[in-house]
Image 1 (cartoon, rainbow, N blue to C red):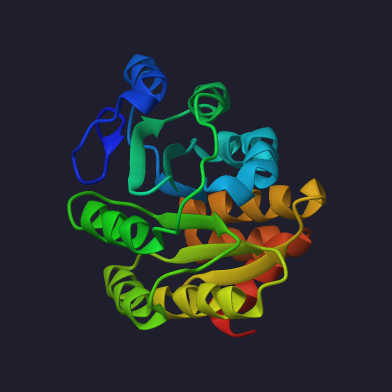
Image 2: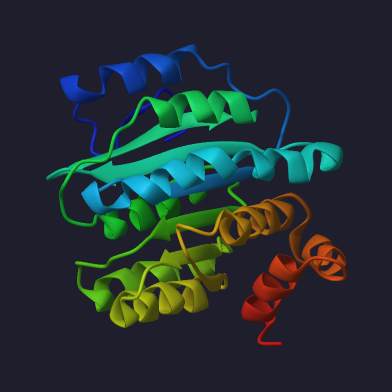
Length: 233
C-alpha cells in the first residue's frame, strides 16, 4: 500500500524487518508521478527470476525519465502467507534496495491478494498499471479472473509476464491480462533481453497511456507486443 512497507493484511513479521526498514527510509516521490504496481512471485522457484527482475527493473525508470518520471510500488509474496507492499519510490536505486532486502522462500502463490491489493489501491488513488511477474498459479482461476474483471472496470490494466513452460499458468496469466484490459507475454529467466523491454514498455504505458505506447511501438518490438495485446491488433 502507499505508506511504509507492510503486510497486505496488516500483520508484521520479524522475517522482513530489513525490508520494512528500507522501505521507511526511502523518500516518497515528489509531485504527481504516474504510479505503477510491480508485483513479483518470491516463492522458492523464483530466485533466478527475482535476481533478473532486480537487474533489469531500472529500465522502467529510464524509459520514463524524459516523460516526467514514474513512481513504482514493489509487491511480493512468499512463504506460507506473506504478501507485502512497499511505499511508492521514484528511482531505480531505491527499488533495487528494496528488492535486495528480500530472499525467495517456498510457499504457494498469492496472486489473488496481489490483485485485490491493486484493486483496493486503485479505488483510493490513481494507479496507471499493474505489472505481474511469475511462473505458477495455485489458486482458483475463476476467483482470480473475477478480480481481474474488477481491475478492468477501474481502468487498471494488468501486464502479466509469465516465465516457464506451464501452459495452464500461462493461460490464467493471459486471461487476467485480457479481463483487466492489459497484455500478456512470456519470457525466459535466462533471457534478460526479453523481460527488460517488456518492463520498459509497461512503464511507458503507465506514463503516457495508449498514445505513448503506440508511439513507442513504431520503433520497439516489446511495445508493439503489448499494444497488440491491449488492442487486439
